[in-house]
Image 1 (tube, helix red, strand yellow):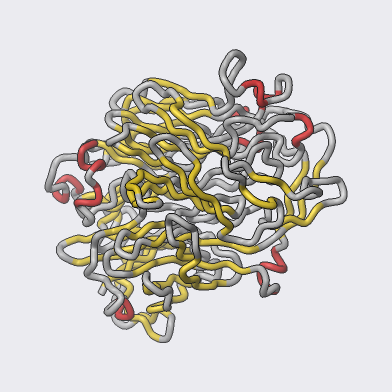
Image 2 (cartoon, one colour):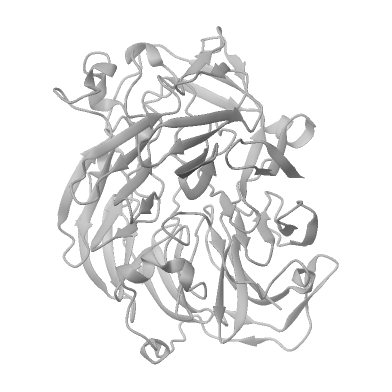
Length: 551
């Protein structure tokens, strides 16, 4: 690792002082840096009360990605300086969102490596490297988005669909449980979620004709406690929404991290698209629980309610977004709400206690639906289904939103999302054949990459929405399409990034740009913020490096 003294000059990082090189293998005594007991379930429940840490993938169980830290604020953020930068020998997309516990940062690299770093300097304490098989069936690159922590143990899902437990003190593997068979197309790319004494994980592989599920594991032993399939089997409600035996290979993966309401004791998890992706003729029906959010009893795995955003999806518009939970007045009454900017270009408000549909409105350009009716069901525009010749539809296959996290600020009462107005062509092929480990898609969706760069109508923007109505309050445009997550803070700041490598800070109230820096690599992750020894930092992955800033 190269440690440097740096300052920011005209949007670039300039080296000012002498450079000292530390060997990558240098270790520190991690135990001496842990000044309090390991992370408890109660601490995660009250995570927003200890903003110096970042204890779970989305920061808190409600997944607002809002920090109460305010040392960095809209008045001084223009003075941000790089504190440390750590480069990695990786070629895959760097989508990690780190955890920070008592001054120690835990990151994952694309091919299932975990590193423990000094959060003040970036110096590595230890590295854990999971051994992957030579052949893997993954649809979207060899990536990993993060770990979970409970006690003094980290938990990571792997590309060959295992769940591993790692000692936070030294990186030693404690247990390794096979979640599913990798040869069939299962993999895990999302961060697990801790609920009570359980590790909850979803699974990827929808493009390979798997049958999706959510699992809960004993955090101490790695023993599976329950499994809930996201496609109902024979005799279960919803099985009749799949034609014939298509339910067996209908995809519906659960590949992002969910949210949890401790008061209601409900776990919320998004479900991906049905398979084959673009040929719905072989799976007639609404295809439950694809493209749904599920409310699950975490003690039993039972589904308490569901809501389907896109019935019989043929455009690959997974409900893979992270559910954002807020308590607000809705039409004069206090409600426990769920906010959801869906990949299909509609913004939804649901009652998270009952699953009642409350509102839907467009937050990005779409041409596939005439409207969303009073029950939350889309009324489709004729002629928008994939065909042999191809059909142009907005949004494109990557969606108006996707896996990258939104944010909600109780300071401004605004919901922030990286949105995209862009279309693409959808093609259907006949008779898709299911073979283990091979794509099972029934066609293709083609995003118009050239237009993303050149067409002014293809707009990528941070959009701030009024949370109960979806009304646009402001937007900050970036080009081409960004896949950055969003972070908001009590300093009245919204942080995000761009495909061109810019990391920016906006005024959370009006969207005015306050600071921007070119990091030289695609920002394909969500920022986190934390505090060590009285100083607030903000960290973002970009290109093949991790950048950390402070005053």
